[in-house]
Image 1: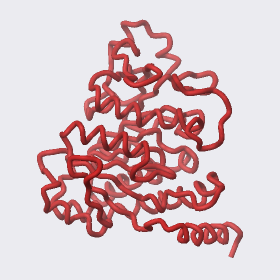
Image 2: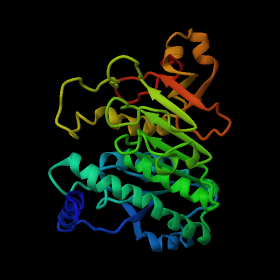
Image 3: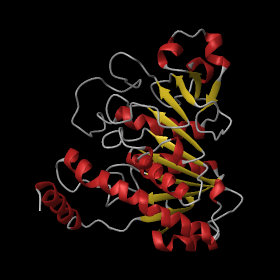
Image 4: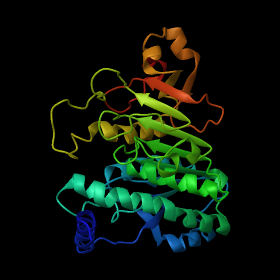
Length: 322
């Protein structure tokens, strides 16, 4: 057995001993964040026969990233925003155990534990969605949202579902994780082939998020070509890896999406071939072709959309952000 295999099994043993509920589950929310039903993937179809499922509504399922958990800030922010909107069936893909950091070395845990688990889970979810579809879930009204590794999970699942003849309509990638995915083939990450419409929010391309376009449309918040991309309000001093300060740019992505839900029409991107072109656009050129963040639009022109924001919520500046 080689050293990397020994290391993986060592991490596995430590993770098992931490006391996590090891099973991946879907958490279904009943009108509030505190009221929910949680079921393992192979029993998730039971919820489609309860009052939770309204077939006239879109079903929104959020997936957290590395070290995420059901009461974490990203989950709380996105789930609460959709619950308050009162327009969707809302659920969470809870993979806390597989997304955890079983050792003090966060980078090692990401590379040897969470990222491989994300890839395997993405493939496994093909059976889950086939089960849900057979039980009555209207796939054409399904919106999958993933932050960081969560975006890559949905991307892999979507591609493999398509191979099985099931086309997901909409995946939103919220600063998809870069390490371990940037150079992978479309079948192994979030890509335009993952769903009919894939919109991606980039806020940390200098560190944790993808540096390249990965959707049907890609939104670039406060982008710059020279120097690291820093979101307004995020510091520029060195911080411990994966600390709140270190993750400020990466986490701004889900905060922008939450704001787009809470304050519709306030975050707008304008199309350009690339940032260099957009930077030299006149105001008239910037407002000529725009796209709202957080909206399903299969008629949108594929490509890159740029905008700037406030340093705190509400982040959107409407056309003043173009």
